[in-house]
Structure formats: C-alpha cells, structure tokens
Length: 250
Length: 248
Image (tube, rainbow over all chains, first blue to last red; front, side, top):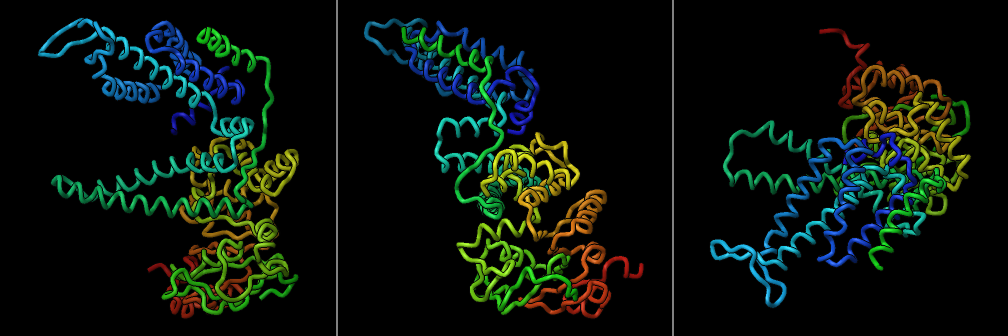
C-alpha cells in the first residue's frame, strides 16, 4: 500500500490522466475481458503486454511492486494448476500422459485462458492503483454516484489498511524482542494472543479515528474538494477500451 | 486566575464514567474565559483526555451541563460546538485519515458546507499558520511524527475555532517541533486548553493551571503558583517541572 501511494504521486503522463477516465477505462477493460470467451483469450495477449508496458515504462515500476505482482501471479498459477488435467469436452485427446495423469487439450486451453484473464484483471487493477492517488479514486467514485456510505467505508478501509500494517509490525517487533527458539505449541498460543490483542487495538484506533472525523463535523456524508476537469487526453485514454470493447462484442 | 474576558466554557456538576464501577468525574466544575490558556495536568487516568472529549460533545456527561459560548451542548447545537471547539488528538495518527494533507485539512470546512474557494483559502491559511504552507499535496502517511502533529493542528485550525483543545501536544516530539507547537500556543491568541505531562511546556505557555485527580479539580490557579508547589504536586503523583528540580 505504501508503495502504491508513492507511485501514485509520481509525475508521469499516466498519473496526470483524470482519475475518472482511468477508472472508467479500467472498468471497461475488465468488463470486456470478462466477456471474452476463455478459448479466445489468447487473442488479447497484447492487452497484457500493453499494461505490462505501462507499468514498466510509464510508471517506472519499482521492484517491490513487481514482487507483489509476481507473488499474486504465482499463487493464482497454483490455484488453476489442476485445470489441464480435466477433460472438458467429449472426444478430447490427451496431449501428454505421465504417472497415470493426462494433460487434455481442452483443459490446457481453459487453464491458459483462465490464467491469462486473471493476469489481465490483476495488472489492470495494479496499474490503476499505482497510477491514481487515492483521493482521485474517491473523487471519481463520487462522480460515478457511489453512495456516501460506500465512500465512507472505502475511505475508512484505506486508513485501516495502514493502521493494520503499523499495528501488526509494532506487535511483531515487540513479540520477537521477547522470544527466541520456541515450540510450535507456544507459537500457536502466541499467535492466538497476538490476534486477539491485534483486533482489540485496531478497534481502539478505529474508534479514535472515527471520533476525529466526528469532531470535524462528519455526519456520514463525504464531501470532497478539488474536482478536476476532463481534458482531451482523458477522452483519448478512455477511447482505447471503447474500441477494444467494440472489437470484443463484434 | 485571570478574570479578563467573558466565560466561553462552563462545566457544571459533570458526572461521567466509562464503567459504572470506576467513575472518571464526580461533580466536576470548571470555567474558562476568552483568551485564556489553561493547562490541565494530572496523573495518568485522571480524565484529562476525557475532559477534552466532553468539551467537543464526543462524549456526553451522565449528569451536569457543558456550555460552550453560553450554549449547552445538545444534539441540536453539536455541529456549532464542533466548529467552535477545535480538538487536536494526542496521537496524530488518529486524526489524519485522508490521503493528502489538503484533503485532511479541508475535511472539516467541507463538512460545514463552505464553498470550494473558501475551503482552499482556509486550508492555505491553516497550513501557513503551522508553517507547512508547501505541504498541501503531500501524503499524510509519509510525514514525520512532528509534521503529522502540526498537520493535525492545522486540521482543527481550518475550522477557525474560537477554542482549541490540545491533548498532549508535545508528547514524543523532537525539540524543534516541540518549540514550534509552544510558539504557536503562546502567540495564537485563541482560548486554549492543553492537557500535558510536559510541565515545563505548561509553565511556559499557560497562565492558569488546574490539577485533575480522582474525578475532581484538586487545584486551580496561576501556573507560577501551582507548578512551584512541590507538596501539592507530590500529593497528586506529579513532580516539579524539570527547571525547578535540583540535579541529584
């Protein structure tokens, strides 16, 4: 999160694009990708390449952000790994057979399609988060008529993520400072204690943050300032997914 | 006790408890005059922070009345009270929740329905007052602790409150930021209520000091008189300010 914050404040053309345009673009891309048949997904591999290019060249991707992407990709890869071993159509043929397991053609196609779809979704989301300050995202959602309660929750959750990270680190350090080589049973005991105290501390801090909001006149309605206008470059940026979407549906 | 200026804050027979078995206040009475800088000291758990929360209407007394500018805090007057009493929390992490400094400082004025131009002017003025005029676009999460304290103060100042309540304003601060806060308190001209364990700071900035202990005000008077009274301080689990303590 800290990384995404820093990246979002970079001065690059992608960061200067209007938040609403970026959100609409990402939303349209995601929608189009979700509607593409899994078998046809390989035809849009260029979309993945485009977003990787954006992250690497426009945003000057930081190694840690790349790390997040690779870790998520690896976890999803493990999740979809059983897919090639299942035949999805009749009269399917096995491409490879070993140790009693068969890799089926239709399964392999489904595996590649699902994995690629997930990667596009992941990278589109990552590009949006990395290139858009959170305040811009809030403003865009407000323009898209997101209800106030949802905006408040979003704002609060954003703060909560940092609180969780900080509290977790602080408690972890305190725990490590007073523990050496310990048994698994003791480790589990500590983990349970840790979780309970962690939750209690988070609740305490959340309550104080809420008080801070109320003490400055918050009554459940989020009011945002500094609305930016839509420029020509923002319209052009929005054009890309529209063209892509038309291509998908035709 | 200073008698200049009208009474802007009045607490009458305040009873408050988080848990019935251990009440925080049992019949607390307090009056604060316009322009006064009041130091509130006392041992841990004496109710110093709770007192500030009561003044802002965040907590409601079980008995008694809290009056701000002659108006009793009620659900109808709450918004006006929050505009009048600017509250700065002890931990700035609790106070700052928006992505940028501008958004955080603008949060209060926007809630009070000011126009965008007025909000921008207020944000600039507040940040200028705490010496952070170029911090508008900075992320609140990437500031130093001292800067966060100053931004937290600016979030209250942007509402242009008549009274500012500061909870432990100098705790955990380095010397430079402590000095900045002290300079602001001494020079700002508003009515200020400051809770602190930093007795030297209270001595330097507040004309009047009260000692809170066991739900009551046990001493109330000029800071010079209260903070030099070693017996009184000891009886309330406090010590003389460092400057009056002989080096042992």
